[in-house]
Length: 609
Image (cartoon, rainbow, N blue to C red):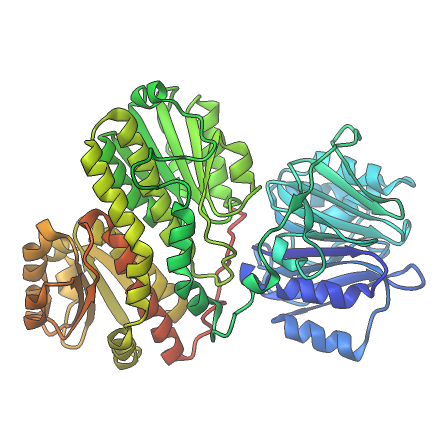
């Protein structure tokens, strides 16, 4: 959440900052602002509540000229969305300005202490303590003042700092919140994410915690907390700038839904090949270590959690290792039991999810081995885990995750097959049969995307509903949860997912004439039971759209609309069945006139608890 951009160079900073912030809108925000050192070496701040366009209009009316600046899009945590609470924040004299992503947990204590020293505060934010602390510690050396300040901060932060006392300098630092440094030709950047600077440079440094950045006329210097120079390798971005653009689609979400066949294929590439062993990139876990595992935890948040539920089914079914799946925000507080025989798999699209990171760190404290599944190279999760399996989904801009989810599913299957291969729980023939089916998934996903008229029609007929219910059994229930989440995320329709066998235990009381129900029936061994559950809701007046494997035409006798997914083995069905559910959410949101890519109150990367 929140977005930071900073610029040091020879071009007008304001336009570059605003352009960079526009590339970070997907992260979620409710206000935006910039602070620029003008031609006189003074800091000029402009910020406002609402969309970035509001800030652009203000800057068009009153341009700020200068070559060094910082910008920010804020997602409110402390204090309501307002002009006053927007970033950047400054000290009382206006000589120091700061942008901040994260949460300062001890800000109340620091605020009270600073007030005793005579400092005053204008906003309700936790961030405002930072420029005032820097002011307190400033004695002619901005870097030293920033270093002393962060020693006092508890919590998470990525900071960009400028000062009129040293108008030819930009300072940055990170801890538990993402921040990268871009290196161009005579110009330098900081940003929360790579798309913000990709139009200007492909050369970036990936910062570690407590690494400080100094940009001045000598270039970029990266230091540790002891002021020792840190030598880092440049990371060269290989994907194109237009990968973060809509590419002719009406919305990023629709574009990313249609990119799923390629994303599925890319995530399998070099890992699954016919008549070859499963490859897990550079993961070093051995056969003996796998056999020594007595329990696996899969921990994640939101959509990634739903991928973890599918992962549990896959690993237990194929590798016969007990798996427990949990949401990170709950797991971290329930005093979980872990040891050297425990494997922790954390799943995070961004690799920066705060609760998931906390679980990772706790697992390592208890000597558990940690494998991270993430989409972002160089993210905090990928660096701190023992091993990492990347999902090659490419940049995902829409807040509602689609292609990141299906690639997480593929990663779960790859891990399950790798464990099964090493534990000899499947024959070679069984392994090859599953691999063969997986390699067919990209084409089958493409086929689904070419036939979505029924889904669109159902969405347009039911978008006015206040409620919608998703039913499934086994793996279908895991997909039902993801389908329900997508619908509520972007259409704001109340939706719930239930295990269909639980209908009689309460949920059936909610079914009445006209209630929209989405029923998944892709699991062969549960098909007949699922049909019985569908009849139960139809009898009470529900309007049902069902999803089944090709060949199960009999389901049409009991539903209002039937969608068929290309036939595959039932274990892999979630990769395909989720696609029409994503489209259902998309078309429902369009019919309601919602902002598909930027749903209210949500952010792409949840980097605070």
